[in-house]
Amino acid sequence: MYKDILVHIPTERPMRSAIDGSISLAAQFNAHLDAVAIGYVATSAAYVMEGGAAVAAVFELERERAVERAEAALAVFGVEAANAGVSYGCRALGAIPADAAGSLGEMARLHDLSVVLQPDPAQGSFDNDVPREILFQAGGPVLFLPYTFHGAFRASRIGICWDGSRLAARAVHDAAPFLARADEIVIITINEAKAVSDEASASNLARHLGRRGLSTRTVGLSASRADIQPTILSLAADEALDLLVMGGYGHSRLQERVLGGVSRAMLEAMTVPTLMSH
Image (tube, rainbow, N blue to C red; front, side, top):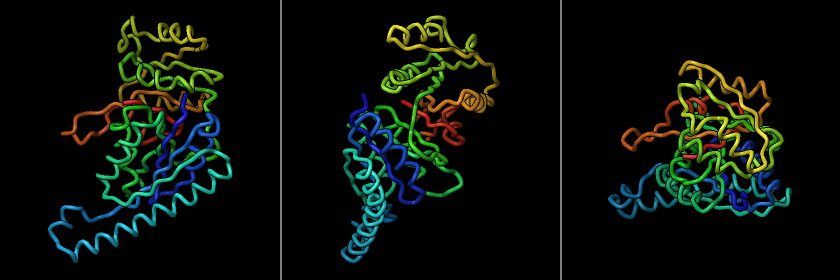
């Protein structure tokens, strides 16, 4: 069960989607919800150490103002969480982006689920970088809410994006609390005959989930590599899915941890809340 949830509240982007989605989710699971907001500091600590007392004073003032921005965002969250009657906590940080992402990743490791807002490529913001970093550092599931999301979160109809991989299996395992409550579960495969072994087939996944008492339906589709993500989103719309479950794919640190393949495309053009595991 998800009993301890972390949510990142943006300070440089609209926050309503993250607030509404996370609070309604916590209420459904009767879970505690920790909210973290970051006010970003441009000056690095290394620069401050070289600059002496005057630079240190400027840095401290900048950090204090950054914390104030974070506290302002959390004040909005706090009112909504209190009105909803959920157990919650707030933490405001003032930090450079790299340090902020690391701190959030460490916090996420001690929560059952992390909730973040989908990056918005149309807005240049440090808040766009944090969600991807949390996915790589959390060690657990991350729920991405589309920046167009509004209203209460629900997961009655769930689509599992299945390719038989370790990461897809991890995501299915991490989504167990959602799956147990779902009214309908659709297992989605793309080019299964070419991509998935018989041992890890969608039919075997359906059999496995059936032993948990879960009823599933399998939809197999064909698509070129470039069309996999839009094909999934088209099916999600046709099936009126509330949630997609998929593995989060990443490369090495030398490649700046850039997400690849379908998961990267999904973050760029997300229309449905998506749970990813890395």
